[in-house]
Image (cartoon, rainbow, N blue to C red):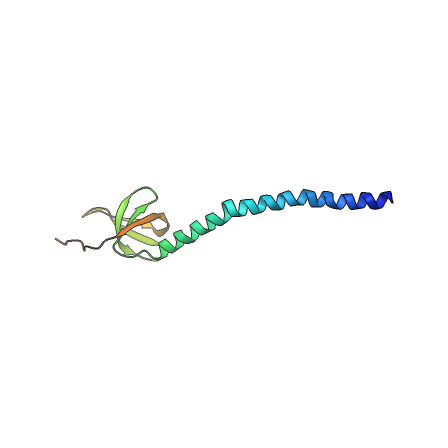
Length: 105
């Protein structure tokens, strides 16, 4: 009779030790993992929808307008003369779409 009670108590001890870890994983998932995945999806969508004329900001803080774009390279016009080449992944965010075409001299 004593052995049966000890065996039953040992089972709840293991369950009692596993439940906090499962709860901790659930909390981490909803507070850290899921929001990060959502943010990554939005960033990938933004990078895939970039086009000529979009005004963007790079990770380094450089503002420019996209003049050329390929699968992994973006050429930005910083002013009338300067064009800089960046990786597409270096774009932090798009600010606006350029509605007026640039005046050619």
